[in-house]
Amino acid sequence: MIEVTDVARTFTVRRRTGRFRRVRTTVRAVDGMSFTVPRGQFLGYLGPNGAGKSTTIKMLTGILTPSAGSVRVCGLDPSRQRTTLARRIGVVFGQRTTLWWDLPLRDSLALVRRLYRVESAAHRERLDELTALLELGPFLDTPVRQLSLGQRMRGDLAAALLHAPELLILDEPTIGLDVVSKATVRGFLERLNTERGTTILLTTHDLGDIERLCDRVLIVDRGRPVFDGDLPALRARADTGRTLVVDLAEPGPPVDLGGVTVARVAGPRQWLALPPDANPAAVIAALSARYEIRDLALREPDIEEVVARLYQGVVSPAAG
Image 1 (cartoon, rainbow, N blue to C red):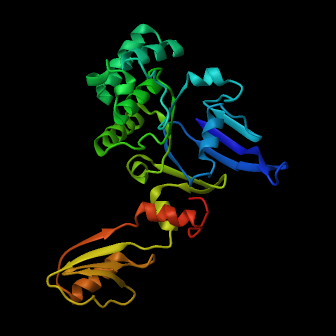
Image 2 (cartoon, helix red, strand yellow):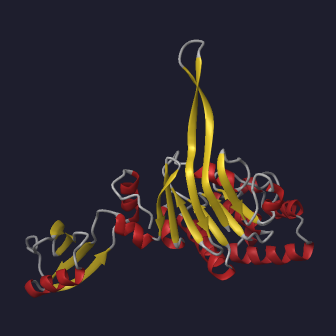
Image 3 (cartoon, rainbow, N blue to C red):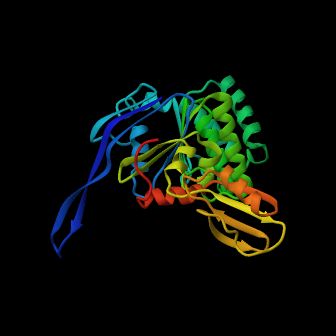
């Protein structure tokens, strides 16, 4: 669905160095980027601010032309076949709307139908389906300017999907949403990918979106990929072990087990930090032999901590 090969994108920035003098500097927003996305995949595209995510998306959609390398989306060259490509992809920017501010949502979606030249019968069928899946019914006749952020986001998703695109590109689709709206959007995207096979590329700073939805994670920094794999592989690359939360029968001092650090004690509950190479089963067996245990739980490293460590250069940048 997406093929990016040795892509670079540079910009010329003029910087003031004196009262009347300016110096031109070349900035490489994307530097030697290569990756592919097969049909039907849900890809999480992550990176710190300024890593090159937005620039990459603009090249994928034809807004920008690569300075070097090649980009193919749906088998097309985005910059040269932008109009044709627009009919095969959907794009949603969480901080910008494609809807008409003063029109009811229904009328905005009718205008979108004409932009994409969707037949009336197909439009009615898809609108009915999207209305049910995204729960648009109560506010279809409400002007867009009066919609809540969550309602507007659902309207933008409907607008991006009215022409049944093969690829959906999402830039921060859950930013600022409340818990209920976020759950509705996530549930819809999950169904869209699993039941319809729609390929989805998601950029987000909400790592809950990644854990819930994505089967692959691509992380970039300074315009280059630093990780490409699934979440278990990402956690495995972090130099941090798992945590064993143990409820003892009675409160007591920190447990004494070789190679295990007690990170916290709260009454009978203790948090044991396991080294990355520790065998949890062996630790639990040793613990059970010496202490009376009421309950225990093994927790994986928090994904936010793992990604933060990768940004800081703690995690190996090798691909997964």
